Image (cartoon, rainbow, N blue to C red; front, side, top):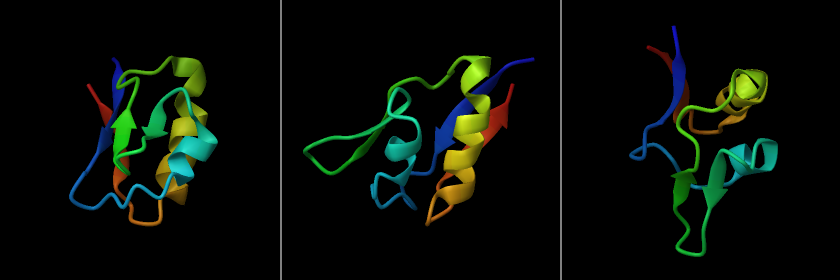
Length: 66
């Protein structure tokens, strides 16, 4: 069973907390929008993704199980 990163862009304020935790997966660009660089990160990154989920001020990030 796999997993993936899901961001609710209606909730996201692009404050870059997630990017600070895992810049290989999350990036806020000059247009002030959040981009998910790797929707299906390596399993080794799951703990860091979970930290980004927990620390997101708007609770806009979640892990979806496939």
